[in-house]
Length: 564
Image 1 (cartoon, helix red, strand yellow):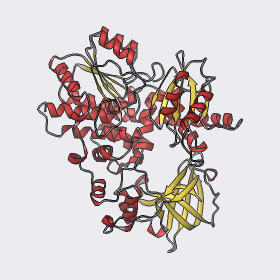
Image 2: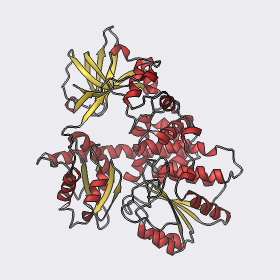
Image 3: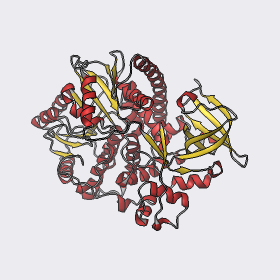
Image 4: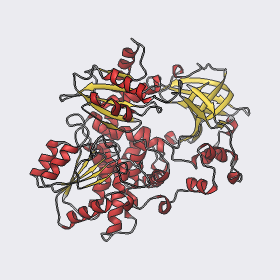
């Protein structure tokens, strides 16, 4: 990996700020004082937009209010991941809060049904006299099933954030800021974020006898989904994630309390990393390893014992999932070692479980620094797979260019899913690599991806004050990466591999003043680094600064990214 120290710039408007904060803001393109003030101090009233700016919002709200008034049977139909399920929780809790009981939540089985709205489910809903279907994080590409629903007397309100492949479905209303003709200011909301806008709009139209601002308590679910679905943490998303984390830390939900206890985290200290690396995998384990409804039941639990049991179960199956994925990655590595990978890695095996391929694809992208498409086979007539981008290539664009090779595909720039017939799977590698070549026409591709380092720091600056200053830019994620620092010529006092399988790495560094500082690399061994470190050596380390409270011990430490 190539690392580049960002060119030092200054802004006269930010000269009164701490020099490090000044540098970090300018590195993020924030050079004007009012923009810096907005970024450092999110404001709900200022940063969260009017939901009625979204196309079809008025139509969707009036249809739902009609259903409520006439006590129609409503089905909430959500995707099974850590975006769709929190979205289902938001809408479920809205109906519960206003006392509406004639509704149910339907989450398709990942293995038997797969992603999207399905004809069989629609037929079942019609037989049970359902008259309103509200989708969450799906529906934009489900033209035929939604057409069937409308023909059977079921009005469909689509809430989704995925791109349309061709024509939009004939739904009663479509809430999707990416659709043509929608001028909503933030088109990168996650699925649960769009559901929140719907609930916000419903409360603006009618208060249902509840306190103004009731919907803000649902922001905990928006925060989990926003951080899980890797949408840019800028603009409205930044505000929603910021306030959502505030609600999460109050741990008003039994399920959040139970999950924090299971993974040994204090709710009051929850961070975006805790969500992304600890909570999200356990929520997703429900659909990958069993029944997605278990994650939904955890987040809506009102009984402490039930919440504890579900949290423990999700933790157990997530550990099982880790073992299966580790074996899968080893299998993929063996296959890739037999030949030189092309610009786009396309690999598969009928024995690989499709539900786990996205996790494996992410790891292979990290190792090979190129887009990855991995396929496997489950029940059903088609082969299914997942893809991940290296950050430079738009995998959604690649699949669109190679669309003749797919039965179905969807996703966004960084990640997606697809299904392929058994006949077409053999031509898929060539189709995707040809599409990659076409996508580069008129462009000069970067040969080696580079990572920009914000600035150089000394180990003496690894302290609470520096962490607090950095943390004022959080939450971090896509669009607002954690500040990355270079520590030059630092003494490596100790090197330890730890964990059950010795899969984690810890350096003990010594500052010029003799202070010992820990540097941690999870799921990182010496082979993952550019330079192999040895005890007693002096190294250049690239990393971030973080606060750890593991097992009640407070520590400001480094998270290792690489040694150079």
